[in-house]
Length: 130
Ligand SMILES: Cc1cc2nc3c(=O)[nH]c(=O)nc-3n(C[C@H](O)[C@H](O)[C@H](O)COP(=O)(O)O)c2cc1C
Image 1 (spheres, rainbow, N blue to C red):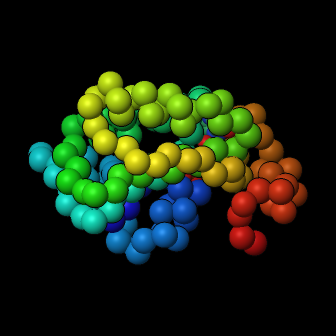
Image 2: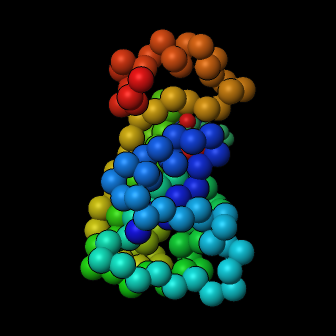
């Protein structure tokens, strides 16, 4: 089971790769109670200003995960800024299990800062299929 939040599709693309059983976090947030049970549960989301988006943190705080293996993958465009360590501390403070956290560099969708044509030229350097 993979729960994902994706503004422009990078994280959705990643979410669909390891596991076809995908659920949109914004859709899940409409439910009053959120309990998930699976052999393994993952969350995939983008990095916003060096952090996991507050919206995704709210989802994690307010959900119950019953699993043997819980993982998190954060997609980013330029600098991950050590988000994996901060995210591990976030889980520890919540008293929630996390077995694996990693980051994947993809196109940067912060269009105020980055030019999409320039991003496309970097495709061979980033871990994105073309
Ligand atoms: C508001 C905003 C803030 C972002 N902040 C960062 C950042 O701090 N570091 C970084 O490397 N990429 C940053 N990005 C780029 C995204 O994390 C990256 O493109 C991500 O793969 C987008 O995933 P999505 O298509 O699933 O939304 C930012 C993008 C947006 C829109």
